Structures are given as structure tokens and as C-alpha cells.
Length: 173
Image (cartoon, rainbow, N blue to C red):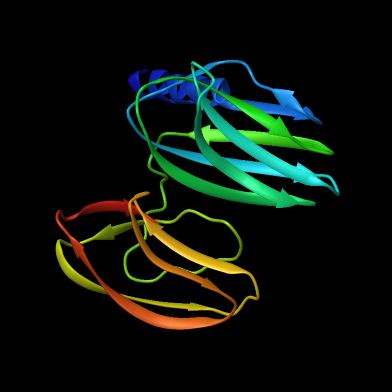
């Protein structure tokens, strides 16, 4: 019974953090807890898609997406508790799904992917070498916990960086 209640509460929380529409739109207000937020968004259009996260006063917090054409991707940001809303600029149908839960899949060691994505990894404390490769033609950036930018390159890339991790914990990349 307790598990069923927890699952129902988690579903209700996720449903409250889901939006969809077509064209330019302002979303309703929603509440985020202190910590992080994962923002997964899609756009099915041929022109600009911009997704701007605003605080309760309408002040910009993050320009989450600014792309031309169809889009599907995820970003993660550190966030303070409070009420938020979005300004969406879109030429077609769009969706936003947010979560503040660490996903069931937490990796250790290696990760790979394509496009804008978020990966959660278990990392032991201390100095860690992070090796990275990119075989695309556009921007390649890796940011740890919305704080440490360890790669920001255009085009193909191969390199490594030492990063100090203060605590053994789950980090998002």
C-alpha cells in the first residue's frame, strides 16, 4: 500500500510538470523543489524553437533551448525552490516534461549518446580523469552539475580533463 501511494505521488508530481502546445505560448505556473530539474522537450516545426525558463516575477532563469527546426533533447540545471513558468517560441507542436527525480539508470564508468542529453553517474571522490570524444559537426559541451564546464568545442573533439569531485555521489553530466 505504501509503495502504491509513493508511485501515485510521483506520477502526480510528474504530471504537474508536463506541458504541451502549438506555436508561441506562455505556460502556467509550476513549483520546483530545491535541487535540480531535468527538462526534456520536443518541437515539431521548421522555424525557431526557444524555451525560456522564467521565475515567478517573469525574470529569465535559463534559455533552455534555442534551435531551428525539429528538436528533441534533455538538459539539467541546478534550481532553487519556487514558482516558475516558460515562454515558448515555436512554429509547430511542442512538449515539455520535467523531473526532479534521479532516474533509475545511474551509470558508473562510461556513457555515450547523441544530441542534447543528461546522464547521471556515480563518481567516487578525488581527482578523476574524464576522457571525451565527439564526432559531430556542431557544438559539443559537457557540464557537471550545472557548474563545471569541462568541454566546449565545435566539431570533432578528443581530449581529457582532470576534475576534482569533493564527495562520492551521483552527479549529472
